[in-house]
Image 1: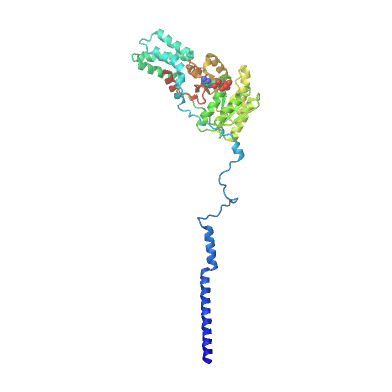
Image 2: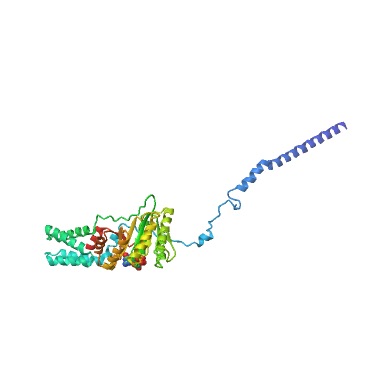
Length: 391
Ligand code: GDP
């Protein structure tokens, strides 16, 4: 019995031991299949951040919107195109064909006469008539004929090319290559240059102011316009339109208002804005000389309370001939004219008016108008002008 009991106890112990090992193995396997908590955390994070599975994008307030929203007021704003005007240099060369009428009657006429084999008194008389008919003026014509006669008597006319060269030289000398034709636009003490544009209505005064603005803008100067022609209803609108095309502001007053106060306000504004040049359009009413003197004189005087006027440009319509010259004389007696703008030279055979007007007024032609285009105002150059006449 003791032996049987012993065997039974040993078997029971062995069984208990076996069950314990099996349970240990089972528990161990189970632990290995479940990773520790920190490893679990890593795996979870990796899964969320995996590039192949991006998080759904939730835009925050700080983030840029996916496209740029155009504000409503910007959507409604009109697009104004500011023009870039043509550079003034070379305009006369571009427009030389516009002098064709003057070219055929004055230039070709003179070339034909001077090219004759024999230059007798009759031929010289014809030369004189040709110059007079082209508005060169009496005294300048006599001077020109005299100098041509002297030179051709000495140098002879056997060579037509030589005669042509002499004619060219004498015409250039008569136009005055030594005259200062720069537009005076540099003001004193950092103030703007002030250009006063005067002339009879209809000569192209307002057009000239607009075109001068373009010349200055093309030279990278800042400009402001003063619409002091308060008498002609549309003048201020016309001027403002010229200015807007090249991004230049216009100071204007009430219609029929005092031109001097508009000029004053324009220059004051120009000083405040620090612009380079203020261009002032004026009214060109030729009622009486005294009335004109009062008006223009006052405009200039009042403007000069702000800054000195650096240039007074007189606009003359080249097609009006002697009548235009008479008007020009009156203006030059009223204000100190420092330069002439000869407009509509494209519409006349009388290109000699350039010489005539300079001699009559004692003031250089600084610009010529050769068409109705925005950039058809050319800085005047004597040699180029004569070459265009004789070409
Ligand atoms: P204002 O009354 O003196 O200010 O004259 P405007 O500036 O209004 O010009 C009168 C007219 O002359 C307009 O039709 C211009 O286009 C024209 N005009 C101005 N200059 C020239 C030019 O050089 N050639 C031609 N053919 N017409 C011009």
